[in-house]
Amino acid sequence: MQNRSLGFSDVVVSEITLGTWGLATGAYGPVEPSRFEAVVCEAFDRGITTFDVAPLWGDGEGERRVRAGLGERVKDAVFIGRAGLSSVDGAPVARFEGEALVADVEGSLGRLGRDCLDVLLLHNPPLKAMQSELWQRSMEDLLETGKIRAWGVACGNADEARFALKIGAQAVGLVHHLLAPDLLHELAPSIKEAGAGMIGRSPLLHGLLAGRWDAQTEFAFDDHRSRRWDRSGMAVRLEQVERVRFLVEGEVPDLATAALRYALSSPFVSTVCVGARTVEQAAAAAAASRPAPLLPDRALARLLGK
Image (tube, rainbow, N blue to C red; front, side):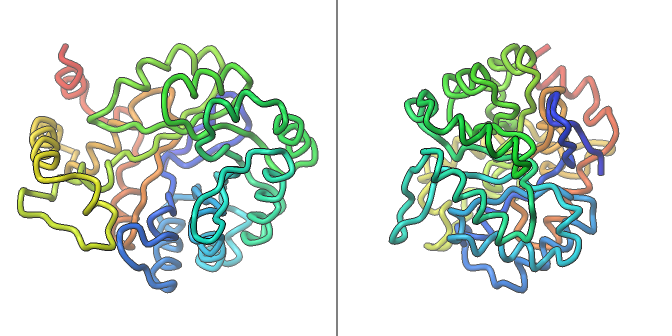
């Protein structure tokens, strides 16, 4: 497993981060606690030392499961935490006021058994919330008291990311995968100027870029993907997947590995979050990390149309 710096901060992350949204929420179907903890343990054993967690996911239970899976090794892990969205009567409620952010951080620290979050991301705040100065003093206090080491924003679009970088975000979390490269390309100058790190989200596009689906693939009712694409939308996506399958050659054993290595090929990307839900998926994701070059130059040139 290779490690990278998070921009100009002193935080070092593993190239692959274990994203825990699917494990904690059952968004892909129910996950037994024992399997959740086994995936966490396998990930760490394979060198994935960075974990993406949030109070919202599983109403804090996800963080407890990560701690249980790591055991004593929790002190050696790197945590990307979230704050600003809470669950109230089963529905997400935005609370980006300073006191709410501090409460989220302290709650996460208690469940994780840690004194500090390595990175704190504002959890998908609207631009209006970021424009408020109410939370900024609290963020400074969290840094000064050592409860966080760096902060950033999980962003939904380029305007949000630019504003976050403008006000000092040390990291931005952005969707970045083979089929959506334009956002990072558009923001690269701003990320470089700010000296920030980029946390890549959805590098496998909810499993699509593993390249194992076909027109007959169906998902269970409790799997969020059953509502994400209709038949025509899925057909378009499958055609897109076939157009990048040429990346599987030589030392690239499968499309999932190609997709992860593509996401990591940008110098602005510090880590990519992979929502592995089995020990086998965790092991395969870890194996995608390697010293440069991640993909052959000719493959990247073809991908970029050069």
